[in-house]
Length: 374
Ligand code: F6P
Image (cartoon, rainbow, N blue to C red; front, side, top):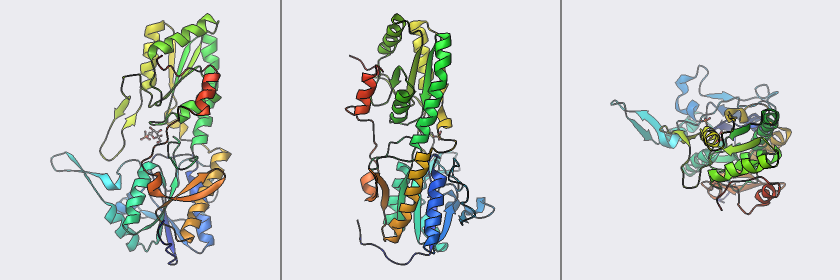
């Protein structure tokens, strides 16, 4: 880590980027209150960096002052009071050319200039891997930047957990619990598709907690014959229903990801694997099969107490990092400790489910099938 910058801080901006996650408001509240306690003025950038890059689009300007009143009573609220965006990545900002085609341009210099214009001394950026990428660039261009890791997918490395994940797993588990009654009463196969991008954490944890019979995750490409085999084995035991939890990033052996689309300036969108798996199950077994896509329901609603606590801890820790003169670091949960690690150590390192982990072994011991080929 570089030498601490102990130049006094007066104004700090907070940005929330990427998909919203339960706990974002708790981070904002903790950072604002902790910053104000140190005599700093706290601001929120609207909609990721959009407010700084396009201030004319906001009646009250692209940055808003965050005071005690603005952050009152928000710890338990989903979403983010300052807005977020997972499009218009400032390093690959899409612009439409006169001939209708798109080009991606780097607008990070404009962000640095906007910080100077507003007299902002530092940035707390709350987001996933995309936000870490931007944070590093802004830090190299001279901004004092602290990153707070966020994602319901739990796929960020170098932190034991991200807030939002626990809430997503809790909701997905409740969804699976509720589907058991219909599955059992009708003797159906119920396929539940959950988010998680290229990692299977949500599917795995919710699947175990919700007593799924089959869990399909990106880390273990599945064989459809194994899916039908498991369904048939259950029938032979007199169990005429099956619960299948499928991660949006799951794919069959030798097959491809189920991608809905890819627009300029944003990540590809995944989805549709639940429908594909269900159609194949009906075709191969003749069983009545239904699909439930939990999708964005996993991102909404009130954060669990667990997520609120780590989000509040992350927000307060980010302010302490700035106070210590740090920059280009990410707040990270390591066991019970909050640590500050260089962003470059965390960026671009996806945390997949380790195949030799006890959680995978636990699922297998419970009789849950991942349907990998022999
Ligand atoms: O990264 C969070 C996440 O919810 C993923 O699980 C999902 O693939 C993606 O965001 C969905 O993004 P959008 O809100 O653009 O549909």
